Image (cartoon, rainbow, N blue to C red; front, side, top):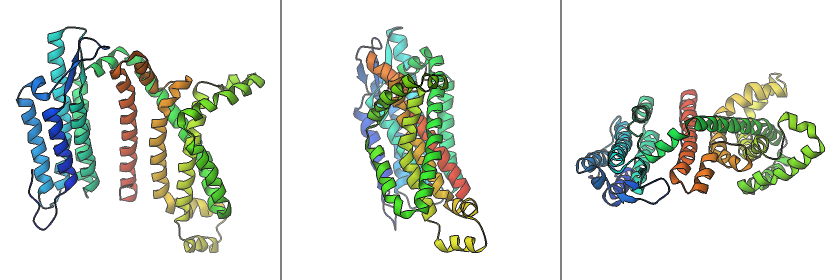
Length: 391
């Protein structure tokens, strides 16, 4: 698809992803047309769904990505690849929306048009190429512009109603108010669990730094907590908390019960302890002893050394710890719906019970997008603060 750059080697990842996207366009079902939301539908390729023009537009973008990946490196080359990948993502979404509108109008009100494997493969390839390009681009504008352009294009598609006839969008339209409520609840659970993990895990990490001999046993206990399956941990908290509230009924007035938000927040906090504690310990340990001794020699107390020396120097590592823990807890909070705490997992488990794939996707994709936004936002903030991307 592209020749090797003179004096260099071909960047294989964009070429591989472009080839996978090409195969998805050629052979994969781009949309699936079903008579209603419960019955299986018939997959249609992009050619069948939109005619010859749609595959030609996608192939042009793939050819551009492959050509840029095969050229000798030049300034903003990766930014251009990122822009082309973003255009590929936007084109895939727009074509799916237009195809859904056309087929839904022809087949009737109950017809559902879902996204097929070919679409998801094309979308994933475009997003992966975009992420790879942003990671390799050296300039800040070259990193920001492709991401913002892609996000703006996707937002315009959704706001303009282009995607409104897709089954996924129709599931959202029916549950608009409930969706906003559960999204807010998901954020509340994640934020509370993160705060608990930062408070207790930070104290454990500081203790392990100050008392290295105890660090091994402390982290061994946290490792055990981390090995408990997430679903099992949520369930294990129900019995003890129920018994506790039976002995002390007044706790119910404080929102403490065996099911609901409290055990979910507690479980999320427990899962966040290990990454936070290890991150704090690693960050503080990365500060050279000579710097600490110099601060002590200047007459600073231990608390002042932590505030004015250790934390500022360990801040890049601590920021990375925050990012990793937040992304992890956003995903785990999906399981909170199983114990009556709500959140985006509500739609996932409702969809599984109703055999409604698009309802499952509504919850799952929302959690994925939320985690990606948190990751991208904190990476960008880390880049601005420390002048290098958090990895």
